[in-house]
Image (cartoon, rainbow, N blue to C red; front, side, top):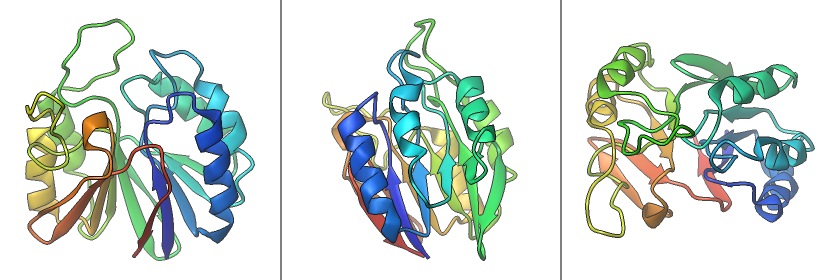
Length: 199
């Protein structure tokens, strides 16, 4: 299976068009959150992404209204919204968890989840799934410009415990393009570019 994955479009229409153009070569397209900016302009990119012929799997980012992302996915036959649940494309299972974990900002627009809530959801992640998370795991693909680590300890532990095949995340802009490992599981911080994976 060939996966095309991205994160953090933040209303970038040009990046969305590039994803649609490339998606003809993909078996599935994954968006790891932050389609909007401060909950504004969600449909700026989702309206463009509707033109992709490939199945799409989304989680919400901390800039997104989770209910609005879910509603947009329900309106498309080949779109899947994941939040503590799974879907299967062919023989591959995908599991998703969105938002910022843990919260680093108290702004009204910031969509977050605490570590305990994330761990409760991650207990449902099947072994061998592709895990899609907006936030990265702690100390892997999560280092900000200031050198601090901003990822989720629950995600790090969940990856160790439930052994996903692959982890695709975003959120920390300074870490876009970074990759790392937790045990035998590769972790990739995507960014708004074309990222290809074979599973």
